[in-house]
Image (cartoon, rainbow, N blue to C red; front, side, top):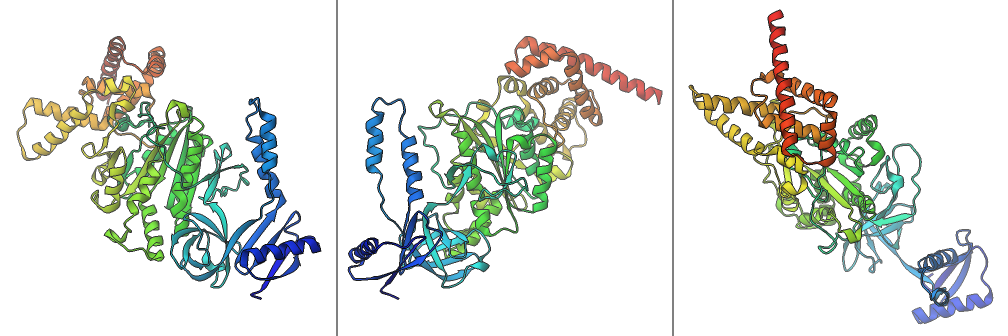
Length: 584
C-alpha cells in the first residue's frame, strides 16, 4: 500500500492520463508509484488523486467559478477591457490543488490532537472524515491541536483529518436581520435557512488609526442617568459591570429598544446563557418591534466551550459587514466573563500554562482584539460605526478581579451597577461615583448637554451629605433642603424597564428638576408628577417638543418656556393633591 496511489473520478482515465498521473507522482516523490482508478460520483467534472497522507484535488467547477469571479472583478469602465479579459483567459490554468491529510492522535473534551498537518495555520478549519469541523488553536512541531464545533463523540483516534485552507468564518448579510442564529451562522429560530453568498472571517484585523475618526455622534439609550451623565457615542466601547441580577442586561435591552427608527442595526450576543432566557429576550424584542433591526447570536450554556469562544468574534464579523457598508451598529456582548471562562477551559485543555486566577497569559489579548474592532470609521470608508456594550459580571462588587480590570482598561468607560442600590429600589442601580464615560460631552446632543448642567455635581454633594448626616441629630435648613433636593433627583432618575425616554423628554425632565421645581412635591408623588408632566407637554406643547427633538439644541427662550409650563403644571398638580386630601 505504501507504493500505491488512487484516482477517484466518475469516468475512468485514459491510458494517456494514467501515464501523466504516474509521471506527476514520480517527479514529486522521486520513485515509481502504481495508480489505481476507483469510481466516485463526487467528481463528475474532475478527479481526486490520493497517495498516503497527501490529497490532490482537481475540480473544473471550482476553476470555472474562480474564472467567473476574476472576469466580474474587471473594471467595466476601463478602456482597455478587452486586453484585461484576454489576460484573465491566458491566466486561467488547470493546476492541481493539493491538500494534506492527517491522523487523529487523541480526543479529549472537545480538543483533538492531529499529526501530519504541519502546514496548517492558526484559525484554519479542519474537516474530519465523520463530517465534524474544528478550528486550529495550537501549533506544535510534532502535532497541531484543534477545537471542535460539536460533540467529540464522532471523532476517534486514528480518524483522518483534512485541511481546508480556509480560515474560520461566518456568512454575513442583510438576510440575518430579525433572525436568531448560532455562532456558526446557522438559523436556530425555526424560520428556515439563511441564504447569502458573503463570507467574513471571524478573526479580522481592527480598523487602523488612519481608518477611524473620533466619536462625535450620540447613541441615545433612552436611560436618563446614562444619557445625562455617562453618554455613549457611536463607535464607543462602554462597559456595563456589576454583580449578578443587578439589571445589566436590562440596560442593554433598553438601549436596543431605543434604537427603533434611528437606523441603527443591533446585535445581541448571548454567551453561556440558558436557552429559556434567550427565548424570553427574543420574545420581548419581537413584542416591541425591535427584532426587525436586531440579530441575536446565541451560544447556550449547554454548547461546547469552542462555540462560546467564537460567539463574540462571529457576531462582530456580522456587525462589521453593516459598518463597512456605512451603517451604525450597536453590539451587546452578554457576557464576557463567561467568554473568558470558556477560553480558560480551552487553554487548559490545550496545555497552556495557567497564570493569575488560572487564566492563560494571553487572556487580555482575547478581549482587546475583539473590542478594538468597534470604532467610528472615517468618511472615506463610509462613516459607519460599531458601538460595543460589553457586559461583565463581578463577584461581591469586586472590580479589581482579573477579567474586570482587563476590560476596564480596554473600554472607553464603564457603567457600574451596585447591588445595594438595586435592592433598595433604585433602578437602574447606577453608582454615579464609580461610573464614567471617557468620551463625555462629545457624545451628547447640545440640548441634553446643556440641560444636564450640574446634575452629577448635585448628586455627588447629596451622597456625601447623606453619609455625613447619618451621625447628626440637628440639621440646618440649608442641609435639609439639600437632602430633599437630592432625594428628589434620585427618585427622578428611577426608570422602569422597557420605558426609554425620548431626547426631548429627557431635556424637559432635567430642566425642570435642576431648577428645583419638584422640591415641593412629596417624594412618593414625584414619579407620578413627572409622567403626567411629560404627558402634558406631549399633548399641549407639541411644537416645543418637536423643536427639541429635531434641532437637538436648547436655547434660552425654549428653556424659559419649559420652566413656565412646568411651574404652572406642578402648581396645579399640588393643588389637586391638596384638594383630594381635603376631600378625604
